[in-house]
Length: 257
Image (cartoon, rainbow, N blue to C red; front, side, top):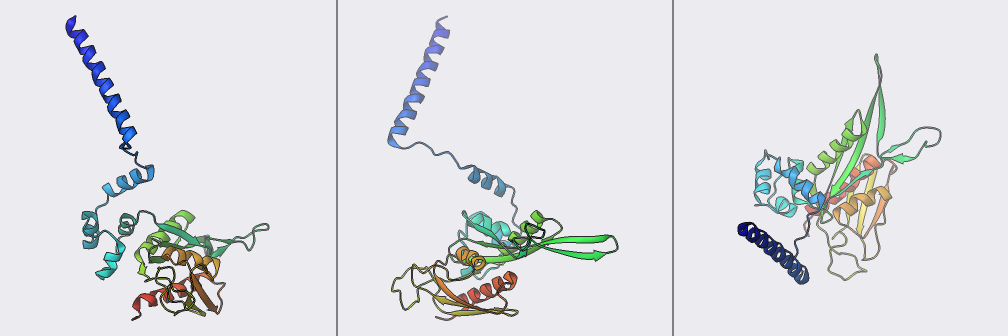
């Protein structure tokens, strides 16, 4: 009987000790923060990732901790998981390259470009998507994906965008601004794709992105907050305009300053 009483008293003392320890931690601000569900999902995702390239193995081992180190070493990203592993808060958006059809939604811009192919069996529908990914710190990429359904096309576009990343050095080169922050581009650059020609010009802080709405998505993903632009040609073709902007941004990194 005494053994049972002693066990109950011991259990009660342990419970009181645990509660007191927890209360002291809360008062001192040493409580352990609960993990975010997105962070838990991210950890579970990379547990099953088996990298196939030397770069992927170095990233998983912790030898490379940022995209800047990848571009500094001149290595090419061949696995989209590398981008997911290195960038904790990615910027992912789809450009409106298509338009809706129908009586009420005709002409309205949308992310999926729909095409048809005539065959003996009938019409074969294909959806095209152009995606933009970036980290907001000078790295951006675009990709185009096609599939018979919308979601697979979007996933394919995002996957290709993660493999087409470029590094965009940022700075402040406007005559009206004397700050030393990385809010614009360091020099004027030109880009061309088909009939579209784009000129990107450094702008002072607070100007914003003076360019079309769809191209703002590309510049925001690259971490550029202020810029002037001039566009020539058939700029309503978002597909070509986005490629021209990317061609201009790629020249920023290749220029000798």
